[in-house]
Image (tube, rainbow, N blue to C red; front, side):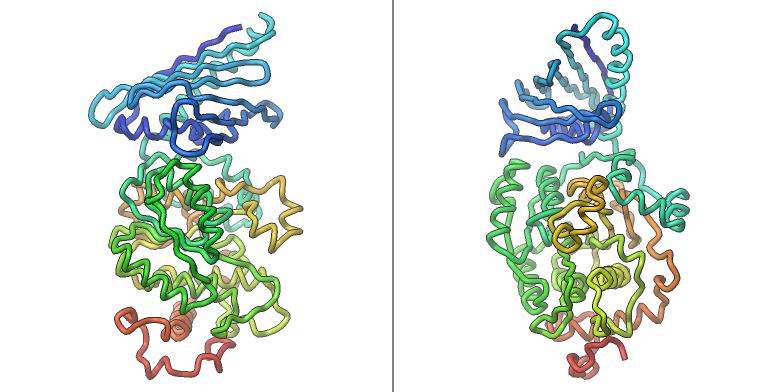
Length: 489
């Protein structure tokens, strides 16, 4: 039984951008509501013969697999793919035509052939198939057109303050309910530095940013893993080897972090986006060789220091994205015990406190760049499985995968609608959210000033004179820091 879907859409987007977005068929998961996930199986650049694996949504929450092959590519004119499922095949054809310099018509045609389908069954299925086609066309149009700058929604404010509704959206449910999931804005010529790109959220974000054409600076603590992640990124995006550079550093070693930042700044005088994604949760209290509790060093001091050292390479339109955690909702600043010296030590609390400090200091980061904060929700990553195995196991059916968790990170780095948005806010699922709800979690002006002074003192000796900016003088900073590890006096 043959059924044909035939849809035309006109979008306010250049033909080259539309073609570049759809050239990689795995982006279908971002615009077709009937597709749960899609991935490119063939490593490297898109070419005839590329293979894709799709998981289609079915009634009742079931998913079925479908395998696609790229049959034809005619630059900025035509894409043809053949799909095969358990009992049906599909021939998908996309024609592209420029209407004006900034407007494109896309003709989407899918010929579906069902084996063994009776006429009565087809009669029932036909309206469902037609609706699927129209939803896909509508989703594609929305994916390609640039929306207005998002504002905080009233329903999000209410949900945030009620806590439970907000927490329910931290899992995959929240991501799947998003109206927009597309990443269609090219980043050719843009330079993006990202920390922690070897697994989980960082690897997913780096891969998607590379697919958009960005040149990536990968910063991690294990060179062998950086080499492996670079290969995975090239396999995913088809980018060239010279579009990736690697820098090894241990973020619990602040002197090493500062030095690698200076090397990066010297070799990359213009950085368009810095993503402070690296983080770690330690179940036991550990102190670095420099005398810092490792959670506060890795999750707070290191990103603040790296941003400061890279500031010469950041311009007024650069974006700094600090990845925090939904766990910060439970914690305020612990100014009397910044390094969690008072027992008993709790790794989750230490992590959340450090992320609260990072969020608080983001608005006061001394850089010309625009600073954003985001949290990824609950995502199934290697880090979560290692640090919180019980939580990971209990909620595994509800957790996001890493691409879902990285979605807002990629959007903040690429969205043109944020070009003039200079406020420092907390973003989740591409919308502004309240960052303090529970009593004791909101920071006062006095708290912020104490935190600023504490971090300035902690980082002073790792900065060169020209990097200090508004940091304190040597006399005020030379206070034998390790004798005050318990916090602000």
